[in-house]
Image (cartoon, rainbow, N blue to C red; front, side):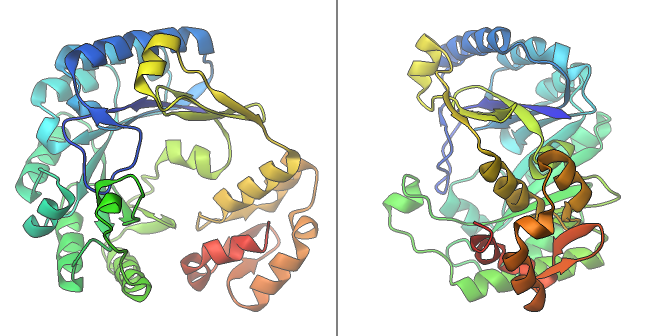
Length: 360
């Protein structure tokens, strides 16, 4: 199983916390970028994609004609995909753009919200408030796309627990099937990083996370991955490709891919991408690197790592390869091992980074 990720680097405005490959939208630049996307798609000769994910950046900030142009380029992959997702912001996702997405086979929408609190939205420099997001979700649902994911953030500057509870409650009341929750990280080259904003207290950050887990469980959301919650098994199929350590193509400036034991990272420089192409930095993965990365990604999932799948892929027993680390963390109650799987306990999920150090 393989996926296709397409990175759209443009945004109407840059959020204060963002350090992704992105730049302000300009029509002429976006037109040239589309030509470069077409060239890279021809060069890659992509086959056998079950999922397509159009991320960014803000794909919905493209003009209607540019969005349709991108979807036309992706039509061969969209028509064969079981899941086709596009990331949008409510303030740039018009009815016309929604209709074009539906026409070309988009069947899942991932919408950025981050917060519904007016003071926090000002701090992180986002435009869409609760009313705009609620209206957009209703429009998406009426158009016949019922697989809708929402992003929220915690650990924002001066965010209170009361605000976080209110955001979770409002999100759970919307017609969504999926929630992704992210702790704020202060990236060096983001506006927050340049302003020397300090990260949230780790204990408070953990309290935010644990509150979300307990509340969303009561609301019928299954906590299937460290940061992700789904209703009625509406798991993010494309992201499951990453977590199951399957191969995927990455297209666009700043995109990464992993195909046939090779990881590649396209140039993050938009001018280079437009004038010279993807210029990928390639790295052949060793068996040791692949085994560790499979563990790192698999332990993010509540289902954990299937030991037979690990053996079939690497011809080594998971327990034998990482015996000391597994025994240590099973004894500590951080990992649980049974006949078929290795997975994190609830407390293990909270400290997965520390656990993985012992697998290196």
